[in-house]
Image (cartoon, rainbow, N blue to C red; front, side, top):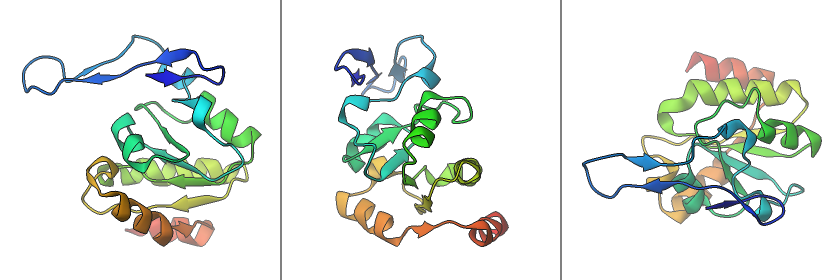
Length: 152
């Protein structure tokens, strides 16, 4: 389950452990309105953004999953801008283009954004130490770094 700022359940996700049937079960609501487990977020500390809930469980502290939704028109984007949050973006390796686009968008709003690069593994399949190491290696992105990242 996910809990909103007041501690009320606002979302849930379940995953099938078997190969047959639905892979995920979640409510049919607009995900861009949900800030997953907002109740546990400290907006004054750096926020780590990942793709999915299972990634966020592994990362643990001050981590918000995107739930596959777009950041362009989301409550999460609005809240990050409102709080002038420092953002660590740690999407799956196969979402690198999406990660660079999100970094550019946050930078347009004056946020400090760190690019956490994951190689091959998704955060959900990494060890806690691997995750912490990747976060420590993250670079604060500026315009020059964006150009370099687009060339990769």
